[in-house]
Image (cartoon, rainbow, N blue to C red; front, side, top):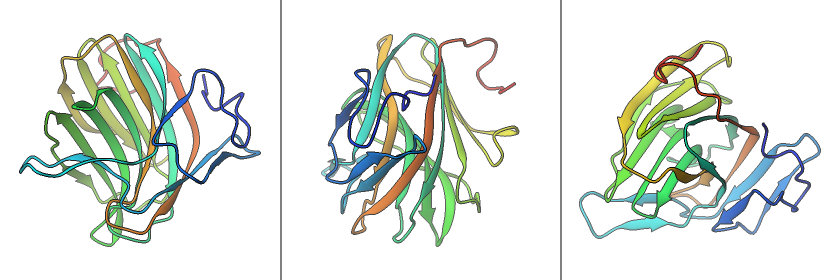
Length: 202
């Protein structure tokens, strides 16, 4: 199911909601979500303390139980850390995201897992401008994957998080130290038909 279906311009389906709705966004004629991240928009809880950011626009739907979610994203990468991400959230202190991000002057795949404080993991210099991103859940286990072509997938990380059965699942656009950037999400497909080991994508 593509949850962007039924949306048009700035009209969302009843299943979708914003955290930090941006000033500029639309679902275009191709059913793509185009989001303008605001300056300094980010989700991050610095493990060193004293710096919590929760200002990026996050469009989500509620999902109960096991699932997998897939998107494809292109980001107008102007400044370091400009990114478009697939994200899950239980609450403001328990969330995780898988990102196509501008890092070390190149498109890269990064991930963040937050359990009170955030980590920050650089996984790959993807060298692609429109990667596929995938998050899968089985119980309290989660797997992150990315793909160049949507067929062959590479695992980014596999981790556990003790969170409720129903969580927010969606996409986020970020520009943590920049003046804003645009992320275009081709779709957001979510399925609750999870079979087998989530570390493998068949």
